[in-house]
Structures are given as structure tokens and as C-alpha cells.
View 1: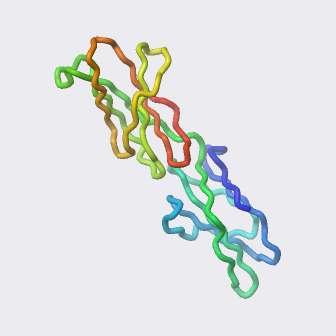
View 2: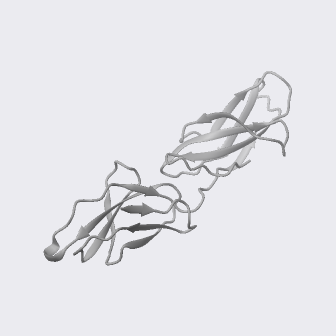
View 3: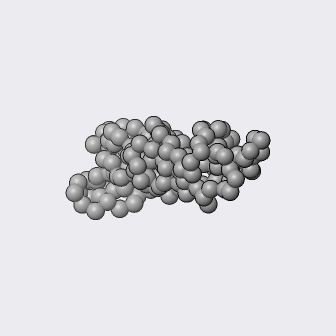
Length: 173
């Protein structure tokens, strides 16, 4: 049975598994996507491994038992994990009376640039410290959103990053 940490640590992903009788070591395989190419990450004689990761996003793992005379088991079923909370988008800005956007508000941000990113969620409020309600969502490569408004209300915006494993960053803005 394979277990992978889900944001428990800020700098690593903890991978653990049930040992196999007679195994002399275990190979750890990793991919950035569930059905991607799994590459050897490391090997250990233990039944746990701490993968130090520098990038946010989801990592997928498989374990392989190695027995005497180099006999190897099949790779285990994959499990995903990630380090600490994902970073939110940065530098969120909204046009403020910009003549280039007379019928709406253009919201821009710096993307998180992480694999496993599914979408950005756009949140809107009528006051800076008010309740932010979901407004829309855009794809993982987009770093802008045009909100068509036909009134002269003031709106405040925040943006969060949502990952394929369901994890979502804090709202930034």
C-alpha cells in the first residue's frame, strides 16, 4: 500500500509503503503527470522516502521492490502528492477607469507556472474586505480575465490557482 503526503511539509513530499517480504531494496519512480513517463528518482532499503522538491505542483509516484539476484516486481499503482500549500498567483491588478476597457475591467496576474495546474479561479467582491464570491475561471496558461460590467460599481478581485488534484492556493489580490 502506497501513501504520499498531501501538503504536509513545506519542502518535501513524504512517500511510504508497505514492505514486501524478501525485498532487499525499493526503487522510487516519479512523474509530473499520472499517465506520464515515470523516471527513476532514487532507491532505498527503507519503506519510506522523503523527496525534496523545489517546485510546486503535483508529483506522481510508483514503487518497485527489488529482490535477490536483481529480480524486480512490477511498478505499484500510482499515487500523487505535493509539498505545502501551493503558491498563489502574484501581482494581481485590475484596470481602474482605463479608457482601453470602457465596458469592463481587465484583471491580470503573474501565473504560478506549475505543472498540475488545472485553472485559475477569479473571485470578486464589492468591497476590499468583503466576501469574495466566485466570478469565473480561466485555463492554466491564461494570466488575464476581462470582466464585462455595465454599471459604475467598484469591484475588488482576487485570483487563486486550482490543481488537478483538487488543491487550491489562497486567494491573492
